[in-house]
Length: 257
Length: 286
Image (cartoon, each protein chain N blue to C red):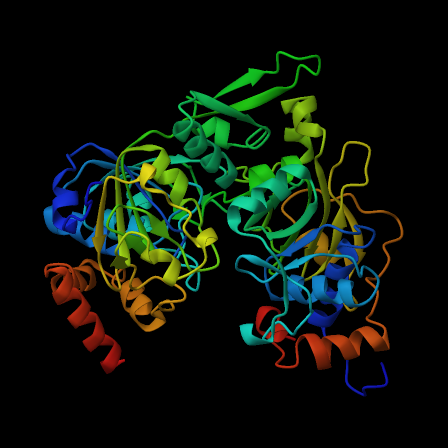
């Protein structure tokens, strides 16, 4: 498929799809959760979004763009960003986070808090974390590594990340800075470019059938007549992913080939 | 000027059942774990625990000392979820106030500034408002008229933080990269307790690091104790990293009640010196 001589993997396609989420964002913090979104954010900065700001995962911003398996000694830091300052950035809107979602619904409501009734959950997860504040203050996207009717649900059990219907119902202060840009799964890319902001299938990854996606989704997806295929990495991107950003193939652990 | 040094057990002896207690740090990072262990030894229960949650929450839940947890998350960082917090929530054994982590920050800030609440956009439209029906919104009195969440002050009866250094007057120094919200936990609390890796003479903190690292002034502290490795098994850079092997051992103690009893007998039914010795032995065996 490319000059490298090996087949492009699903994880590599998804890494590029993640990078595309930050296209056009300019000088804001890109905050990826998960290995493949981290590769994507770094890839975006090394290619079409050079002004993106990346954190070191601790309390600083990182001037260089090392691999996702790099030791901290390889980091070149450019500014201090402890957690308390992160909230200043969140509330200023200069950030686009890609969080994970245990559940996501038709309007982009997200749950990482618990499964079942919140008062006494069947399964306690990590908690809402910063999802309510993120979604209401700046652009948010989601990465769902295992697309199924259990993750793409009609209604999430606990709304942490706020979707379009809930933001609208909460009023102008909630809608003002709200944007759920894309949801990326192991099967495809989804957006909310519909009249009522219901989730739409934007593209299927190479080798995935549209029927496969709708069958794995627990609500009625908006499916256009023509569904494009998620683009492949170009040769430069593929080289960056394989040689620079993830030489140890951590991406395959998150999304096995 | 007063010497604020006091043994950790004396600090903990000031706690009473039913109190609201805040713990500094974040996740499994620079947690006042020695204070948590001292609370477990003292058996002071019915606590409302306020925390950017890590194993402080889990240990206190497992020890049966928690009535309610106020949190935005509970995590061990390198291990995503704390088994004891999960068990406590899933059994319905504890009450909970779950909020956005930025709302949590504003709750501490409001308490530290003696305000009833601070307004924020965070929480609007989310189920945080559904599961915490006591939360209210407030309408901007200005022309915009925006309706915002009024995050109530998180007032604490007591707070514990663990720092890299302190002096005998109660000034505190954080040499690691992130001060987290320790200053606000102290500011939000009636009784304010600091443990530190090392306690030095007044003025000597500048031999440890630049003035900008002395972010906790003695205005914010009532008592200070030197407790080396007092954040173990959480991280306390630059003094030590997280003890990942021990954290795995701790996470494994959630496997069944017998596992917790064994962990507790070995590591918590002993004094702090006994804990540190047992932890070193466990590390050596791992």
